[in-house]
Image (cartoon, rainbow, N blue to C red):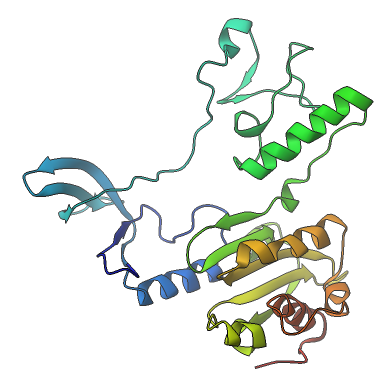
Length: 277
């Protein structure tokens, strides 16, 4: 859309970003994409795509039932989630026990066949390359040294590689409410960040969620052109059980985008930030 193409997103759900995205982030994300010229048809499903003399015709209808509509297109990109890639593994032939669509493993990634281990998208957890890579390292270390593997899925980050990027790790507000966890939150907008202003990338924010009683960091959510790079500090903080005050008191270089994370942590811990907008 930023290069002049007319883009229409047909989304079955009521929000964009897929499962796991924070509701406030999803809302802001759509607003930013609309400003870039993208069109959205929410709560709508595609019933078929037909080739025509001039290109393609996309047939849609309301997800909950309703009138049909057709869209003309030159190119159709289909993204309807992910599935386990077990083609050619021979799991069924070997008698490997399944857990639904996933291969069943114990806490050491071992299947019911003692000398066969499984990792990645074919076992439980997020189907992400970095999660699979870490599991491969953990299993290799276990086989070589006997050190038992452990991977906390709450510390596995998710990134949407758009412009701006969306990145998060840990819990969303919706998850915390559903789990009955009292929390506090702080937000810092990149419009108040010096580096973002210099880069002309002032859209977006950092949101920090922490436990209301202990201040333990529970989730971090970022909208920014470099959100995928910024989320690493949050992963480290959550992995080591940091509080939002810990981040708020750590010296961050100036001017950097990472100062927005510090500012959001200050808002969470103290209710205000040094460079509040």
